[in-house]
Length: 337
Image (cartoon, rainbow, N blue to C red):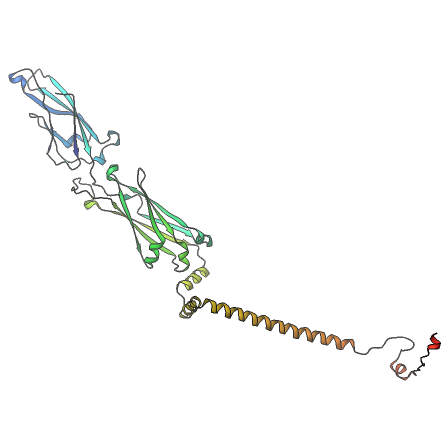
């Protein structure tokens, strides 16, 4: 009997199906050539999965093995020690090692580490200038081996304005050792047109391909079920005035709709009307300012011509001024010469 045997089975290996037939040789003849086979050692907690025929040396599987339940240290391998011994005494024995590789099948669906996430965002004016916001990073767990651990993700929306939500949210997946799904919010400025204070996003993850093999592990989930995570996006600390403003923008009145349609259809006309109105207002203001200035200056001129009396010896009283004789002296050029 050789020292090491290597064989491979899959997780879907049928119960009582033969894995390997061992043969040992004895140089004796007669009773001493009768050999007995038995399993003497192996990976604990997994020995009961195997059985060996004591006479023929046929090694079979009693029940399927879930590769994902094997310790990570064994790297998907199970080692058994099989002993062949003579049937009579004195017993002479021979031992060998059977190394069984358990090949993974795609019998596990991907799962989320968290099934519900709440993301609160402060609704500040600055967020409307952002290109996108990273809402959440979802970790995806798949117990299958790497070649069977691929996944695909999709996004669904619940509530109102699902069309708007479809343009606002997208997924970014990362495969490899750390498998993640990132939920990203974009087109944030669309909130100004259709404001909603809360969104519920449903993220669904599933296998890239489903194995055609039936699941034979009792604890496995039936039908390779997909998993779901709900992400609740909520805007907090929203001023009531802003909510009313956004609500007015979201649901304008019929008059506002007509005005918006007119502004969209006749922008040049609106500019002309607006400019003309401004010019008329300026002219009216200039005319009013001129009238006020004229009235103010007219009152001051009347005050300057009002009579007044200067105190002095020659003009001390009103009567003296009125009754004083006025003498006229003829103009002569000689006197001035």
